[in-house]
Length: 198
Image 1: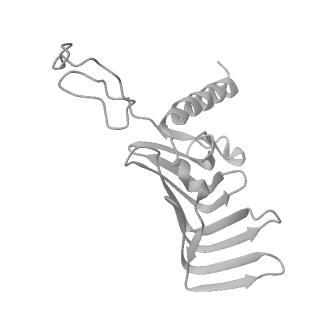
Image 2: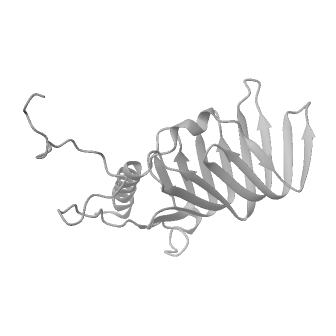
């Protein structure tokens, strides 16, 4: 099998596995964005705000921490946030669980219109013990799809140009070991209920 076919197959596998693992908190998209920083410069004419110094952006369960965040707003009110730092980080709670997805990069871009988060340079996304790394990672908080890209400029260097992933096997359910909390609920009859009428 050629290297390009192998990479395409691996990419497809990653999309399949991670799309089943990532369940973003649906209510986040309806929450306001809050920002805190040491300094801020607001340019109302250009609809650009620059937050500098230990910046923390939150929107519902979404949290981005960075050294600097630039927020631009379009005419419809959607915002595009560019966070930079070494390393900037992102965190979001998964729907119906107590687990979080976490991401890192030297630059993180968050687009509220497309509901997409992009991680660039030393990009990494983790969920529990699953971990993917690449040069660029794109995560849709709307469709819950994760795409990971290597650096084509370093395609021949296995340490820089390739995507790396660690995906843990799903635990099996046995009578003495129930399914994890985030597993779908199943309906079963109860042996303790009686069919007798009161």
